[in-house]
Amino acid sequence: TRARDKAGAIVTPVLKCVNKEVLEIYGKNAALANSIANDAGFKAAFTSRDKAAIGQALKSAFDRAGFSGYGTIILENNGVVLYSSDSPNKSGYSTDVRNKDVVGPALNGQPKSALCAPSDTGTLCLSSMVPIRVADKIPAVLAISTPFGNELLQGMERKIKITNDNLKDFDMAFYNMPAGKVVACSPNLQNIKPPFLDRLNSAKQASELKDGEAEGRLWKALPIWGPTGPPNAMGLVYIAAPIQNTIPNAFVLLSQLGVAAGAALMLSLLFSTGLNQ
Image 1 (tube, helix red, strand yellow):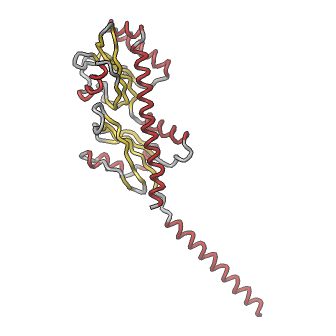
Image 2 (cartoon, one colour):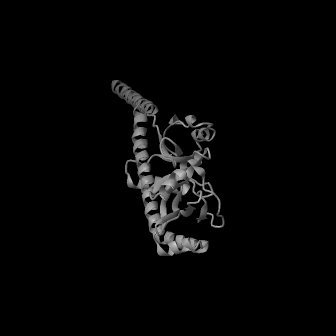
Image 3 (cartoon, helix red, strand yellow):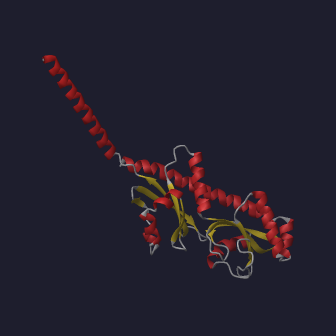
């Protein structure tokens, strides 16, 4: 239908915008990670395993860059976390085993990015991992991560709406695959609480996470790939645009025309009657 096509004309380009935003975040995080990993002060703190100094070096770099995420150092030794700025008092635990497909390439000198949870908080992030080089060795990787929550999602939504005059009427939601629930969404969706989101939260398997039409909206999902890449998504960004039903409006218009025609006929009859008297 024309109404569905109109909604699709919003949803499809928004999905492309979100994908572009994700890639840009990966690029910025990787650049920041490389800058920190090559900083002499950070390297000295890492070499001495001085966690307070590591924390200060990360904070200083984040402040300079205006970065609001966190950094995690994962050692070559079985993926043990030496330090993570989102939980600075914890260390010595192993990063999620699923992260090996991001950590492994970085330890081999090949930076890699993915949606993953580097620290023990379990927060899914857009993470970029780069090697930390000491002399001729790579004893660890540095992950720079942007949490995928309301702040990130709603920030993307505002940016897309501000920079695209024809992309205004849409909402967004983020489904965390490991958690099995929607963890972030547009303020509008938070207010109206559409049943579609409840169905996502009650899904028992990935095949139930379908997009389509529901509650007068067209929903489509963009997969955000995890450490192993396609086809294994760790998260889904849903875009929803209203399907405007034009039929009721047509009926309203026709009824208005009918009333106007009736009124005109009545006036003409009264006028002609008056002339004949």
